[in-house]
Amino acid sequence: MPQFRRYGTRLLLLFAGVVAAAQFADYLLVTRANRRNAVDRIHENLVKGAGLFARRVDARLQELSGRAALMSDDYSIRQLFLKDQPDPATVRSALRSYSVRMGVPFMTLISPEGVRIGDTGGPLPEAALKPFQDLVQVAAAAEDPKATGFARLPQASPDGKLYALLVVPIYAPKPEIVAWIGLAMPIDQRFALELKSDAQVEVTFYYGASESMLPVESTLGLGATPQTETPLGDSAVVTVLVAGEPYVTAYRPLLPLVTPGRAAIALQRSLRAELAPSLPLERFLLILLIASLIAAALVAAVLARNLSRPLRSLAEHTRVIASGDYATRLDLNRADEIGQLAAAFNRMSDGLAERDRVRDLLDKNVSPEVAAQLMKDGGALGGEEREVTVLFVDLRSFTRLSESLPPREVLILLNRYFDRMSGIVEIYHGIVDKYIGDAIMAIFGAPVTQPGHADNAILAALEMQSALARLNAELATEGRAKLSFGIGINTSRIIAGNIGSSRRLNYSVVGDGVNVAARLQDLTRMSQFKADILVSASTLKAARGSYRVRDLGAAPVRGRDEPVEVFAVEGPA
Image 1 (tube, rainbow, N blue to C red):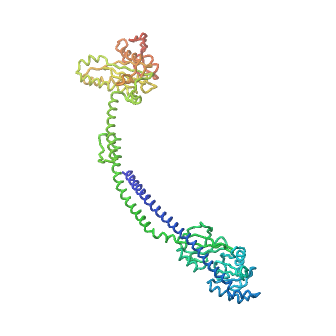
Image 2: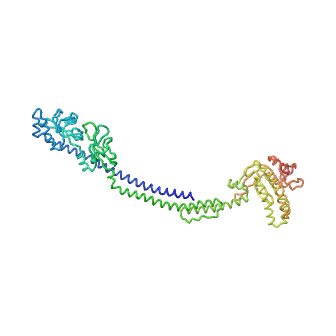
Image 3: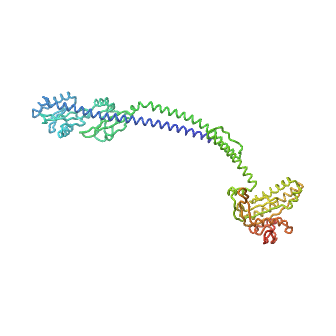
């Protein structure tokens, strides 16, 4: 069936989806863990690299500081200050000699008052001299007269690189300071490559006069390194794209910076390179994910087929049961829950068959209305007072007729008569309360309330009269004697409900009104009335229709002290 094929498809998708979700979750967890671990390792390396950079710069400056201190005892330097005005050419020559020996590209000599005496690179404008002058002020105020810092000196090199600056005093003799020596150690490509070799990280130096900083040296190449606006601080670790490749980057400011702007060192490591050892595992998990999806789809297809077939059988069997066929059995030879469900279906069929048998017997023994009332009340004893119309119809001289016929033919004839009369009662919304020998007791207005119960009883009596005439015509053709009956009808308030014991019940009505209806039927046997249908005044009063009746006056009724107004019904008006 299409709906179960759709169910199987949904089951397939659900099963495959669950497996895919589990595998995909594993894949995500592993890849996320790998990346987190990679970033953590890179962070550790970057922290180490930052420490190594600080130590390397400090060590180099310490070394330069020691060598500069030795210049105080140098004869050529002392000779420079024997004159009031040192010769600039001599100063430049001496400084160039020392810069070569100390391995620095630039040196300057500054007076205690902060005036430039000379340098290795020719005359400098005041803007280039100011960083050294600022450091001289810092060093002069320090307990150990020495100061360091970072600066960008465009005049010290054609492309304006970053430098680590050092200012130390010259004594003549100590503690008298006759001048300050300023040295500029370049933070250049060579320095960056050495740091990369030692720390195993990429190194980029940034400088900017505003919020945005541009690279001035980089082991990744200046063309590939982007500018940055990252806030500087000890925790400034971000991932940036360099030539389309992610690099985990730690920024550290270069402090103190004695020129305007900002400067920083960026220590970087490729995330892709760090993840390279774990990529085989991720590829394996990805392959496993695809393989699991395929396997799950195949398994789900088999499961869906094995499940949809018995479910189709169950659905088909529900239609068999709905059609009223309780004899067909569902045969599913399975030990699982579906097999148990099939067995439950078979037990349900047995129960429904038994229910229908009980209902059929109940419908044959009591009217459908009474059966419904019994189902509603649950077979509880008791009743309620209500107004109903009771009809008694009894065959006349049937005892003599039955003596002349075999018992089986008597029963056949009686059932033939009852079938027609009972059918008329039901047509007019009455119920057959009971069969009393050859008599019928019928009730109109109970157990279901009927506003026109008196009219229904009278019309049913007139129809019975016509039906008996037709039955007699049939009996005449069969050579049998005709039948005759008398009908008594009375309307009154009585008690209607379940009567009997807790083991056996009968829905009926009791009260004086029932006895009156029975006695009126007895009066039809009296020749002076010449009537087959007698009704009480209460019935005519309750009736809404018009009928042709004869007023027979008050007639004594057995069992009652007062007579009853009796009318003979001859037909509708």
